[in-house]
Length: 326
Ligand SMILES: CC(=O)N[C@H](C=O)[C@@H](O)[C@H](O)[C@H](O)CO
Ligand SMILES: CC(=O)C(=O)O
Figure 1 (cartoon, rainbow, N blue to C red):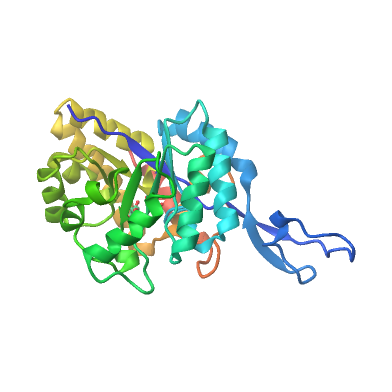
Figure 2 (cartoon, rainbow, N blue to C red):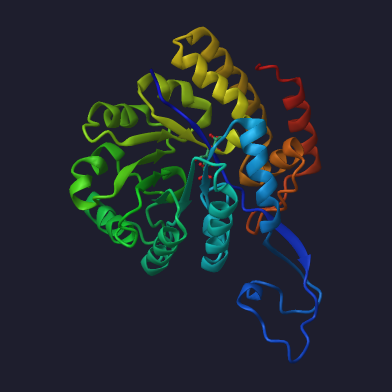
């Protein structure tokens, strides 16, 4: 049968703070470095204090036991290296004995930063690390992408490494089928792919050629059932934060080969996504939905993202309340 799990993703968990004016002789601690220096102005800093509740919420209310930290939904690329380390540490610590896997996304534009994060993730005992392709000066072929990932992965020699394929955001469209060919020789810790693309032919070819038994985790939530049919081994996505239960039921139905039920779940969660896509949907809206569903304050996003509108939040909430997937 299919042994699939859905993994949640961490949100960046920012909060507004009105920075107190710093007293003249007070030394700034490292953790304050992202705080505001100008008196009284508003900054957004990470809020580690809700992670504890969030872990319990995901496990108990959504049945989600694995987490992907500092990825897209967690605004990982909008955070400083220091913030990313603090979040990684908090998730590993709070998730201990509660979560099955804590995967830390360590990808960055700068190779030394990505390497530093990989080394840090290994030191704190992360279950795995993942990396996207650098997306400003981009690799133009497979060999340079593998060379970059190899340097990152080698900083954490005992830790499984995943490639995070998300061409819609990185602009790096090197096919995963091509990338995987021979990758284990270059990157001995290579464990799999988080495949966040709609190209199901590329995905199917990865399944077909998968002699190494890499984990192929699918990341376009509205198409998960199609990827399961092709042989996905799991899923990582933003909607599992608040539709985890429904998606777990879909996985169970699929494992029992009850495709009729599985399809109903996919169409039901898809109906919600189709509704919010029309209103304008992204990471900021995911955070707002999560706050309203879980009642845990997930905070605002960081610029360049802006808070979801009140109108969006009300409409999305009403749609979710009317949704009867289960
Ligand atoms: C671009 C993006 O954020 N992709 C997410 C994960 O990779 C997905 O979980 C989507 O948010 C989800 O499938 C809705 O389109
Ligand atoms: C959505 C997702 O998988 C991420 O946050 O990276």
